[in-house]
Amino acid sequence: MRIYQIAKKYKIGTKEFLEILNKLEIKGKKTLSTITDEEIKKIEEYLEKQKEKTIEEKPKEIKKEKKELEPILIPRAPVVTIMGHVDHGKTTILDKIRNSRIAEKEVGQITQKIGAYKVNLPNGSIVFLDTPGHEAFTAMRAMGAKVTDIVVLVVAADEGVKPQTIEALNHAKSANVPIIVAINKIDKQNTNPEKIKQQLSEYGLVPEEWGGDTIYVNVSALTGQGIDELLEMILLVGEMLELKADINCKAEGTVIEASIDRFRGPVITVIIEKGKLKVGEPFVVGSTFGKVRAIIDDWGRRLEEAGPSTPVEILGAHDIAIPGEKFKVVGSEKESREIGEKIKKETEIKSIPVKRLSLKELYEEIKKGEVKELNIILKTDFYNSIDAIKNIINKIPQNEIKVNIIHEGTGPISESDVLLASVSNGIILGFKVPIEPKAKELAKRENIEIRRYEIIYDIGNDIIKAIEGMLEPEIKEELLGQAVVKKVFNLGKNLVIAGCLVVDGKVVKNSKTKIIRNGKIIFEGVISSLKRFKESVNEVSYNNECGIGIENFYEFQEGDIIQSYNIVEVPKKLKGV
Image 1 (spheres, rainbow, N blue to C red):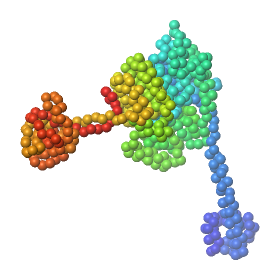
Image 2: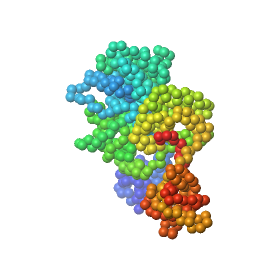
Image 3: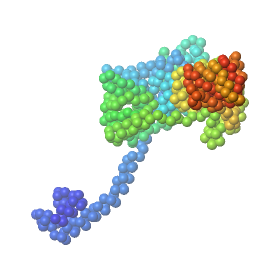
Image 4: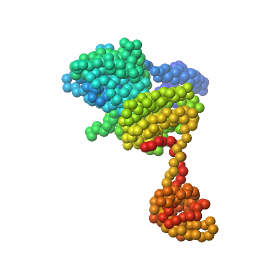
């Protein structure tokens, strides 16, 4: 019986037990019951030694496992975004590069437009993001996605630098990535690339040949001139950045596009950033989850796996994803479901707005040492106004804080401006310009401060006051309602009640009040008494009669207007806000 207890204790079967007997040279036993007590003791001693040996070896096994998870870094292809003014040839350049891949094609293959594509060159590969503009670029950055390694800024040689060129440039600068300038349409007559270099030098893009560090390439998307040189320069900058990715980890990436296909279901376009994604792996992306059913490259080919700097379409998600969200492979389908459902629940709960910098709070942040610079997006009615405002701001002492105008332009305050303020933790100052409705909604959602001004010097004064901690909130009167006096009741010395009809909003007891007669304010005070059918009440609403008594006022006349209002503090905003 004891032999079976030993087997149970050490979790060994009959076959393994017989092997132990052979090792210990306990032979000639036809049944386990014939084993002597001395032999059982020998077996127990052997099993104990084996147990201790296993415990000693466990840390080595763990160490070995950790060693296998150490990062293995390999060079990866740079990811490039092409930006610039509308009609300056961004799309044409992308198409020219895309079409140059025809030589790579095999019969029957068709290039798929999946939001990004990879170009393989003799000296390396480049991934191009096919984003619709700098707004999408910055929107992804606002979500924390930093996909782009290099920005190519396209400027048309025949038109030069335009407002949207500068807007794109400032969005690229905010990402803190290298910028290569492609001067396009060089095949046209009377072009002047040197003038463009001069214009962009004023914004910090000084050419290498002038002692700067910006690469300029003359290209023609129409003829293909300079395209190969542009690609070589991108590879050169990518090499200088020493871009590497870990392949010894679970795959991660960023969503750049997402849609629902009527036949394939949710389709997510992802750039893999590290690890190797394999078919069948469970994943989480934003608040959705799934299992990789298929990996499709930009040629439409199905892959078994995809490594870093590879743009692919992924099938198998349970729901649609949002561009900018992180894609992560997890340990199991159960884990992916649990993480996805947890994130979904968290997003359903109304989130607290992200704390942003405001002029009112600036001084306190400076004192805490949390803020060293103020980033400003400036929009004005005319270009002359920009220079005037910049001159005022440049005169502000900047020993406490550095004031940066990270973008300037004319016209309405747009969504693009709000996005830039969001990623740079900046504020928007507008001079005699409106705010686009969508920009207003986005600013509210992102908790971005927008201040509009009608007097140019108020901009500089507000910034100075903020830096010195003197910016006071604006005091405003909030009108609650109005009543017209229908009859006057003299109830005794210093007791006069006005019988009124509420004609707008509501009249509130203990609120501040103004009495208006013939269009002029004749008294300001407090509503001390408010009655309805002889009963004291706290408020009386529109189209109801009431009796109103006002502290220290006894000279009501029929036809007087009684205004009920509160005093409220709001962040200082000038006209038009």
